[in-house]
Length: 267
Image (cartoon, rainbow, N blue to C red; front, side, top):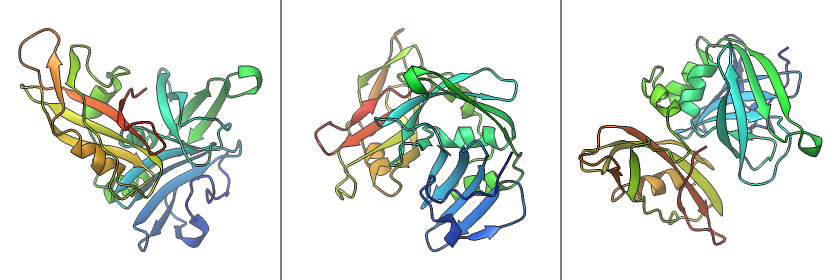
């Protein structure tokens, strides 16, 4: 059952200070001064789900999960009558908040509404699995508004290609010949962060049409820094010959405390 709770702390946005739209499907809040649009819904089991565009950066978040350590966590997600998919989510500053690595694709699934199942491996005591089942309201406008605010398509055929990628973010026939060379943003506002990028391949193995799927923290410069690192990156066809036109993705982790910025596995 949906409640009247507010995601003020768990989604790290001061929602009570925003102008709320009482009409529509999901709750929508807008703050023009902060360049923020967020659609959210909260449930009486403590979970909250939100999609937000903040300063051009798009995120989908789940709040109210069991606390965890580290910077990422595995979740298994299923929509309606579909099969479970294994996903790796990033952990927010609040360790009960998970941040999707593919927010655009996920938001397009969320807006259909219906049953959503979330399995948290080792989420309970002594490593027990926790499973949440929630009924999402269908979204005819709210989630679309957040996508549009960030210039994200309402329909994207690449979603199917994204689902087919393996842990490396590369199709099985490709491997890195030269990984993206990523340097820390010049303005070191945050001590750690990440960015998720997707690209298309060229016949010579270089990348084109690279885009930042999401970055965290928003505005930390990690997305542009990762994007700059793709200029000399190159993949090769393990089967020989030119590289076919294919969709790839990678994650760049940043940590000013010693761990080098580098492309890492996605799921």
